[in-house]
Length: 135
Image (cartoon, rainbow, N blue to C red; front, top):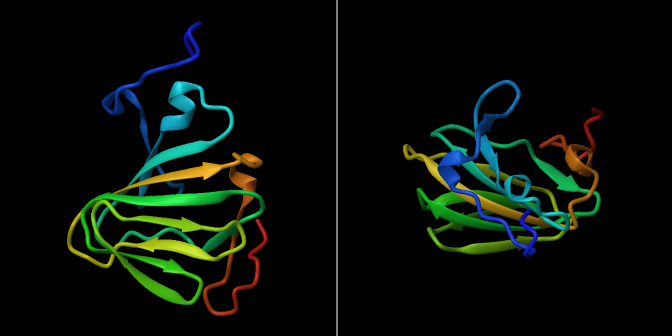
C-alpha cells in the first residue's frame, strides 16, 4: 500500500490461480492492493465449473456477476438466476455455491467481510445432508 493510504493494481497483473484439483480460478484483488478488513476475489468459471457448497464461520459475502450471465447461484435450497450486473448478499451461515451450467465463461466478483481466518473460514457442506465435511 502506498504511504497515502491507497493502492492500485491492474487486473492483468494479478495472478489467476486455479482451485486445487482444477476448475474455477480466482485473482486475489484484496491481497494485491493490501486490503486488511475485507476479501475481494475475481473468480472465473468455465462451462461446467462449480464451487463446493459451503458457508462461512464469520464472513458475509457480496456476489456480483460481472459477465457470462445468466448464471446460477445456489443460496440455501434455492437456485437463484443471476444476470450480469446483479448483486447478491449472502449471510455467513447460509449455504451457497456458484454453478456454471451454461456454455459460456463467467466472471464473478466476490467481496467478503470480515476477512475471517483465511481458507479455514469457509466450511464445506455435503450437498445432500448439509452436514459439515471435515477438512
